[in-house]
Every structure is written in structure tokens, then in C-alpha cells.
Image (cartoon, rainbow, N blue to C red; front, top):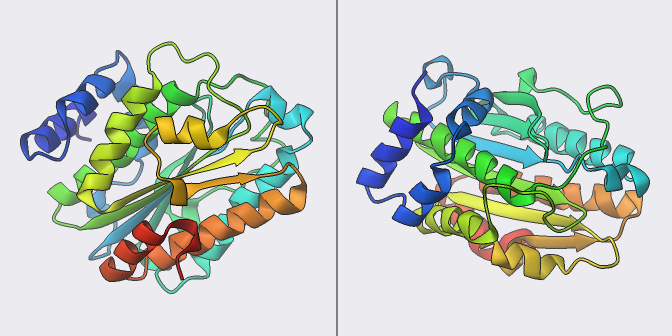
Length: 260
């Protein structure tokens, strides 16, 4: 398995990553955290091109206190079902890592993914939003780079989910996330989306904008179970659309959640 650092150095050399992104990714232990999510090797994926769908559900205590744990489980599982029902399913890989770093499953075919349930998802931790978004996006970039080096084009669609602003990040700031997101947008084959579950005080538009995420890829919903499930459904439709072709991906990237 390639060292993520080598993958990033190659991306820097080819102008895909900026110095600011490399700075954001030069955190002790980051390689090991990324390695945990890389999963299946490109040689074992029999597809001529791939779409990487990556999710980071919030597992902070406020999800539980807000009574939203089951809605988040349902939403995540609904996305997997929608992807598995799409015509492009053979070329799709998925990876889910919780907001506090637990890997539910590394990149794998949809048939190898795991549904969220009460046993594997018990939200009771903090909200290290910036730290873990850097890990997650680093994993997306490393995986995409792995495929590029194997001669397989990839496109990526990533969803961050949180019900609050950052609390407890020790190593990364909003600007570090922004550097990565901006480099990804420049490559025109990555979509980074965010879902804020309203807590009555967080300005999610502002939080996500500071992280570099475009307005058309920011969704904010109330905390009713039906609204949360609906938001995941909107994301799954976007992910399926983006997987249809390179042209459709570009249209979806520009149009955001509302793209036709």
C-alpha cells in the first residue's frame, strides 16, 4: 500500500496540490489515519473509471440529545441503497468515517459497505470538525491519486454532516480545510458538500463557507427525522447524477444540490 505522503508529493509535483494543502496535510499520524480508510486496492477494482462516495456522519453527543441518531443512521443507509440501485453501481466505491475518526468501512464496493445501526453508531463524543475533515479529504485525495497512478480516472463526491460548529479540533483550522477544498475544486473532479442539522445557534452557511464549501453544496435542515432523511435523499440524487458521466459531473458540480 502506497504511503499517503508519497501520493501527496506526487500530486504537489503535478500542480494538483498547493503548498497550503501540503501544509494542512503535514500532521503527525495523519498517514496512519488516512491509511485506515483507503481500503480496496485499485488493481482489485475491475472498472475503467470510478466514483468515490465518502460520508462523515457526526457522532457527537448532541446528535443523541437532539433525538437525531436514528434519522442520521437512516439517512446514511438510504444513500447506500440509492447508489446500489443506480446503473453506475459497478464503478462506485464508498467509505464512511465518523466525525470523531471511527472508520465504519474503508473504500470498498457497495456490496461490501456496512449499514449504520444502534450497535456501530452511538453518538456521544465531541465535534472536531476541522481536524477530521482534513483527515477525510486527505483520504479522498489519496484514494483518487492511487487510482490516477493505476491509470483509472476517478471522480469524488463527499458529504460532511454536523449539528454544530467546530469544537475540540487541536491540529487544523478552517483555513486548512479551505486550502484542500479549493485545490479539489480546481481539479474539477471533486464535489465537497455539507449538511448542517440546525441546532438553533450555529450559522452553518458561515461555518461551511469558511471551510471553502460553495453555497450550492451547503444544505441546512431542521432536526425533524423526515427533514434529515430528505436531505440525505437530496445528496444521494446528486451523487447518482454526478456518477453518470464526466459531463454530467461538471453540470452537477456547478449546479449543486439543485442541479437538474
